[in-house]
Image 1 (cartoon, protein in one colour):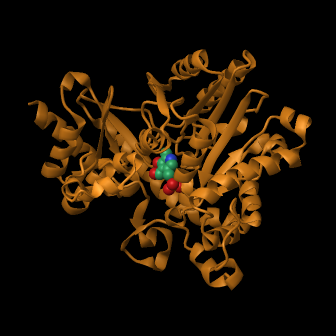
Image 2 (tube, rainbow, N blue to C red):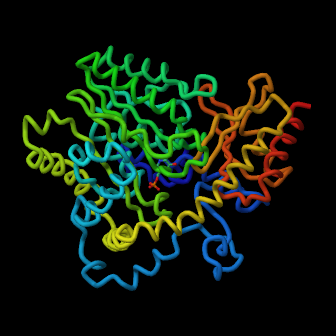
Image 3 (cartoon, protein in one colour):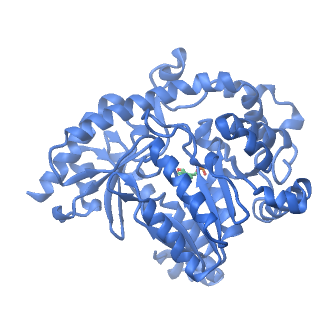
Amino acid sequence: MEFPAMQKADALDFFSEYGKMIYNPTGIFYWTGRSKDEAKINATIGTAIGRGKQIQEDWGDAKITMCIPSMKQYFPQLNPNEIFPYAPEAGVPAFRQAWQNWLLRKAGSHAERLKRQLLQPVVVPGITGAISVCTRMFVDPGAPIIVPDKRWENYDNIFLRNVGVTIEEFPAFAGQDFNLDGFIGAIQRVWEKQNRAVAMLNFPNNPTGYCPPKKAAAEITQAIQDLVKSTSKKLVLIFDDAYEGYVYDADAEFYSTFYGMEPQANFLPVKLDGISKELLWYGARIGMINIACPDAWFEKAGKDELAKEIDNKFRGVVRNTVSNCSMNAQQAALKALQDIDQVLKERQKTYDVLAERYHIMKAELAKIKTDLLIPDPFQGGFFCFVNLNPKAGLKAFDVCDHLLKQYKCGTVPIEQGEINGIRLAFCGVEAQDIPELCQSLEKAVLDLVS
Ligand SMILES: Cc1ncc(COP(=O)(O)O)c(C=O)c1O
């Protein structure tokens, strides 16, 4: 990216090599910005947007970021000590414990084992912060991190430009399924060069909305367990669970695949999650790093001693980057977690709105007649993804531009390597607008090929 004004002013000379190199790609923000001005239907934004009255009767018809209304009531309840002091580097202890309890509640039959194996979660600034910290913690500069080709665009900022690692990618899908062979192959490729591989999976996925069907989730878990048992090479498997719990297909695994992953002496599963989407509180900037340790570690070194030392390392990173995370957000979220059934009851309204949109989106995409648009499988999350058939000879950027100019529908194109398609953020599109969005997409493609 060029910085002509900074160059003209000779301002870049004041910056380090990192400062000269770093930039914020225009990507999604460019399309979101244009869509705000030009779009009638805006499918670019990655937050759940709806009408106030959809979550609380007396909130009227205005468009709002959907949230958990009772969360607001916790703010006046906070006492000065819950607002003004610094929070501890790794997070407020009671909040960390409450988050772990929430995680164990979701873990179902794996809860007993995880109770033993989990360390206290470390609080970081959002899941973005968690990805950044964990990349730095587990991947050496220049070494690869394994991710699918369809991934959240910010991964590349974090991996390539901020932390300075490389990407070992694999095609996300084999037909309509997760590309398990491709994933295992990528791990094996890394193991050929080094002893420790680090991989990151994200279900429900951004940008595709894919979450593994129950059978596929079991196969992924089994394949990973078999793989690590067959070698002494090490694997750190990181789950980006930003959208955990937003699954609308009854056949799909509702909660994270992380829970079924049993740590081994050479296998460390790590779960990144947070309150941005799970508690619909994006602006709080609270994410969590949850590490499940192999029993062998505790047998050798003792759980308390080990936990203290690992905690110290993460505290070190938090301390030397952001120092600590928001005190009042942790305290308010703690109160919410203590009343989790009420929170879930309120969140259900947003879930229902999203689920309705999801089902309409599925039905409308199925009505598209042209074979120039190929939707990826999707079972949950906030998005879905439609590939442009290579035989169309079109670029996703041109389709999105035409879709916006001609049909006033804002979407996000992704063109990277073999990927050439369009992300539709149904989380921000009202149910009645989804048919028009899908029909307009089809028309835009047909306009451009005719
Ligand atoms: C896949 C994925 N991971 C992580 C994040 C970041 O979440 P947070 O807002 O907690 O930093 C996002 C946000 O859009 C995302 O889509």
